[in-house]
Length: 324
Image 1 (cartoon, helix red, strand yellow):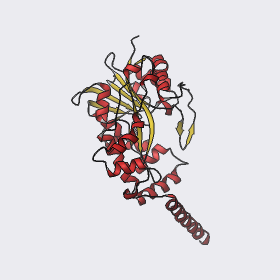
Image 2 (tube, one colour):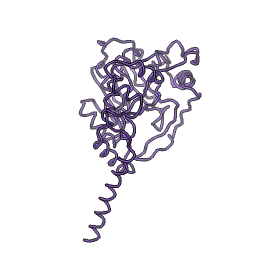
Image 3 (cartoon, rainbow, N blue to C red):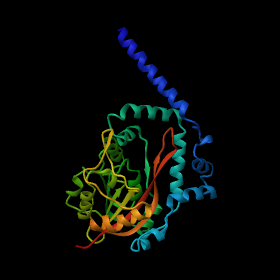
Image 4 (tube, rainbow, N blue to C red):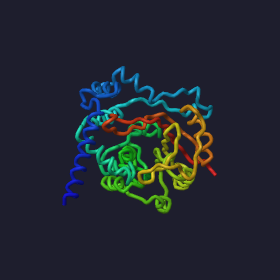
C-alpha cells in the first residue's frame, strides 16, 4: 500500500512539475499579448486587412516568375491573403490563448507521442486543423464559379475534413481516405464516404477531381500513388489538385516515429521556383500529368502553447492526365 501511495505521489509531483515547466516557458499567452508581430497585427486588425499585415504576409505568396521555367511561368496564378485565410488565423490565435486547454493538450501529447502518431493525437484532442486554400482560391485555380458542380470528389489523406469541406460543396458525392482512426471518426461525423487506403482504386468508378494535399512527402510509395491517381480520373475531364510542401523533405510517420519512405521521390532545385519547375517538368510529367495551373500558398496549421499557428510553403498544382 505504501509503495502504491509513493508511486501516486511521484506521479502527481511529475504532473505538477510538468505544468509548472510549461507555464514558466510560455511567455505571453493571452489575446492581448499575442506573441508574433504578424499574429498581433492580424489579431488587432482582423476585420480590415492592414497595410502592415499585408506586407508581412506577402512572403507567404511571393514568387519570382523569372525564376520559373519557360513552360511553367505562364501557368502561375498569383494568390493573396484573403478573408477566409484571415478567419483561420484569427481562430488559431484565439485558441492558442486558451491557457488551460493548451496545458491539457500538451500533457496528453507528451504521454501519447511514444505510442501513436501526431495526426492521431490531434484527432483525439480535436485540434491541429489544417488550412490549404479558401473557397475563392480553390475556384480560381480550377477556373470554376461558385455554382459549378460535378459528380465525384476523392480526397486522399483528408485529415479531419476541414479542407475537404471547401471542395466538397461542388460535388454530389464526396469520398475520402485517412490512415488515422481518430481522423476517420471526424470524417464520418461529416458524412463523407470513407474508403480504405487501397479501396479507392477498386470501386469500379472514377472521380471528377482527386485531391492529394501534402501527401507525396508523407507516403511510402509516391510514384505508385501518382500512377493510381491517374488511372482513377474520369478520362478527359478529370482533374487533380495536388499540394506539395517545399523544400521537399519526405518522411513517413509510423506510430510516433519518422522514417524515410521506401520509394524516394527526388525533387531538384534550391529555391521554391526551381523545385516547382522540376516537379512540373520532370516528376509530374514523368508520372503522366500536365500542369494546368500552379500557385504558392501557405500551408497553415493551428498552433499550441508555443506558436499561434505553424506555416509551411506549399506549391498547389492543378493537373490533368496526359493522353496515352
